[in-house]
View 1 (cartoon, rainbow, N blue to C red):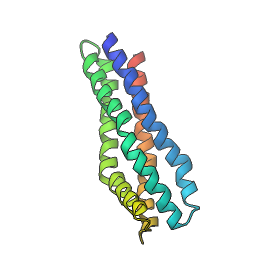
View 2: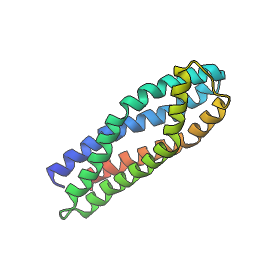
View 3: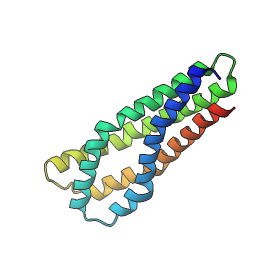
View 4: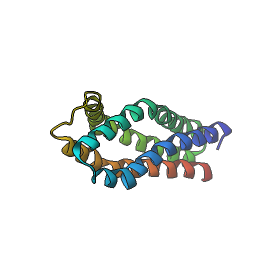
Length: 155
């Protein structure tokens, strides 16, 4: 594997790892913890979590997805196994992005707007349920992407 592909894979692991760790925390800790609070607390917490998350998390996500693509492309020159592994990470990222943009982001915006207005949506619990139902899948996709990127460094 070329040095450029290795550096891109390492950078992708860092960016992807941040997103994976965040999603894994949400699946393992945040989800059951929020099930124990009332709807106004749920709205305030999630609105504020998403306010900061949606502003700050795009940086590691962009680094992860672009570096995964770069690792796949950089490894193409005679390094089929490395390129396929990094390419798999990129495809996993695309799947994650589809879930995030279509399901999570609209819910995030709803909770943030409600928190800003000191309101509790009548469907707060249903919104959180819809968000929760894909967080494990999002974490799995990111975990597999980290593994694929690691594999790209050792095959």
